[in-house]
Image (tube, rainbow, N blue to C red):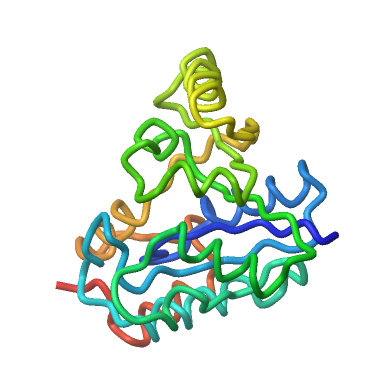
Length: 201
């Protein structure tokens, strides 16, 4: 059986916070690979800044090209219409029945997980790895894990990650303001953003 991590998101742009989270999951849970999976049309929000799918995919490719255990997955951007995690897991389960899936999410997502489409089916197809963040104390996270585990019979494990407070939103804001994003994302991604004039006013 292969152990495959899944980290979805808009990655607009991808940054070191994303990469550290994926690396921590790979290491702590002995995963064979981590799928970095950009959304095309997530149901919960619109993509900001009118950045194309091709640009987001290109930046991911640049960010992970030197890491052999990260894999760019176009599973969601290749589908038509809105994307739901439950459909993604169903497709992957059919394609790779000999794999165990580990869905990586931040604690902020864990706290509104019940609002996700068919949350009860999602937990049947994967183990959820919940990363703690500075805005949530550990006791709150553990309480939420216990609640969801009891209600849905979910397998949810804590993912310990470095406390690196970076967000794509803050990076877009810095770029619009003409501020440096050095050391916040890979140099190759920064150069791509500059070359294509992304996120500028």
